[in-house]
Structure formats: structure tokens, C-alpha cells
Length: 238
Image (cartoon, rainbow, N blue to C red; front, side, top):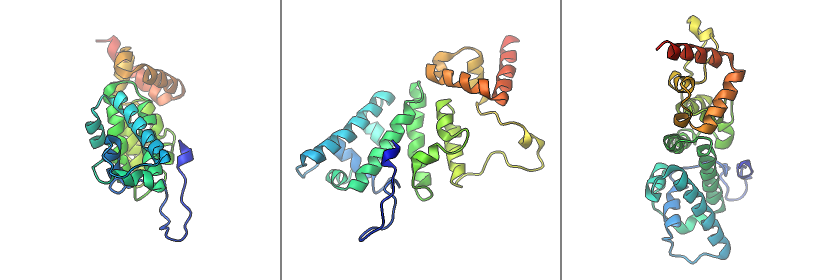
């Protein structure tokens, strides 16, 4: 995935814009017509291969989200414009392929349909919110401990987006050093409703691989282990 996150070298006719900086307006608008085969210009075999790769990524996302193709394209911000330009512009193609792979990779981290759809929506919103601040969305999603990707793997998608937005200065941290003594407490990374589901053994609602990641995280995080103990005590006294 990170092989595609590289910067263009400045040169004649270059603006210096990173090849990994996704512009939702300039880049994603051409995907819909390309996928739907509305192009008017004959494609070379290589251009057809590129088109097939984009179509294949979209089909995998369709299968994961169970959205019809038009709904999926709406959710990731694809409007109809010029389908032929996408496969004839290497920089545009790389940005779109990288973006679709990032969405697909992160949607595969979660199990439930609602979580997968939330990941797609969140990645699309995050790309729009951060496109002027970062040139590598993939690196942004790996920044911090826990990183936004880590939070997605725990099913904490809203926290993942907030963490990424804080990292680029779009949002402010929820906890800041100050006079409030609670700011000094260890941070709990899993929200109470999901900890309650975990305490009740609701693996089906959380998802199998997400539940396994939660278990691994709790084994190494005292704050989350303590919060889970509280939820288990609540459940036991019902």
C-alpha cells in the first residue's frame, strides 16, 4: 500500500504537489464514468488494465459494504466527469488507486456491515478535511499510539477520525493538560458501550476479529482493563 504513497519530483510543468495528495474534486470525479464504462476514447491495453484495477477495487468495496455501485461512489465522493482522463493521467490514477486501497484495507479491519460503511464514510470525510494538510493519508492513519488505524481495528471509528483530525490540527484534543485532575488520568481507548458489549460476550455484534483485537489491547492497557472490570461488575449486578 505505501508503495503508492510517494511524492512527485518537481520539474518542468510540475507544481510540486505530492502524487499522494488526493483532491476529491479533481481526482475522484472521474471514477464513476470510468467504472461504468462511459468513456468515448478507445483505451490502450495498458489503460484497460488500469481501468480494470480500479473497477476491481470498487467491486471489493461493493461486496464489503453491500452498497449498490452508485451508492458506494456517492459515499466516496465520485461525480461524473471525464472517465478517459483518469487512466491517461498517471498521477491522478495513482492517487485514486491509493485512496481506494486505503479505504478497502481499513474496511477489512472491521467485521460488521455498519462498521464497514462507517469506515468508508469516515475515510472519505477525512480525505476532504486533511487534503490541504497532509500529503500521505496512509502515514496519517498510522500516526500515534494508538493510531487512527488502531482505533479502526478496535471498532472505534469516530475516535479514529478525531485522532487523525487532531494530528493535522483540524480538531482540538478532547483531553488537554490543565487544572482538571481528570486530564491526568490514564486514557481509556474503548468507549463504554463497546466495553459493555464485550463484557456481555456479544462477539457477534462487535465482530470476531474486532473482539480479538479488543482482547489483545485490554491485556496490554491497564486503563481499558480497569474500565472493562467496571462494566463487568455492572453486568454482574443487573
